[in-house]
Image (cartoon, rainbow, N blue to C red):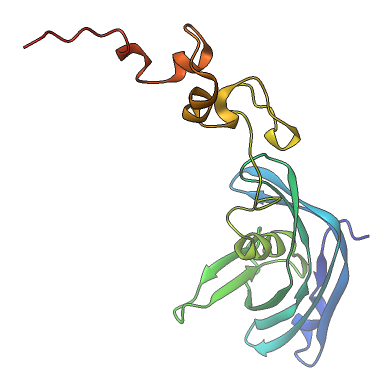
Length: 201
């Protein structure tokens, strides 16, 4: 297991005839976003393989594969959902010795360029961003997920709770009637109109 995905580019910077390679597996990625440390977790070890070749004038090209299984939350009930991704990596790179932290910038062509300043390049942020861009915005653990009770937070997939969030108020009223002073009566926005007296014309 690799602590962080690093690739050594010293030989490549000295001689354009060499290529650089790195491979391993990751159970998470720790990276910095703004000034905050972030952690991207995986459901199982995620294999990666990267190679970099020189293009000349401190420019290079990175290519490879990354196959993480992201741990995301169900949009309705917040259960953990494994989301497998198969990523084909490809990015231009540019070496600038004054750069302390690698970053992506957009070139005039519209293509993103990975700018770095150290011969030993930590790919954590690059791989994390690649995975997050490829991930769906939201997921469900099951298409029939019933979500959480809006009153008490109970997971309705495990069975109903005592609150009305599990079924429409109208369905309860049709079957059982609405007992005066009940929770359902209080949640019915028209319940207060039941005793309204309208003047006769």
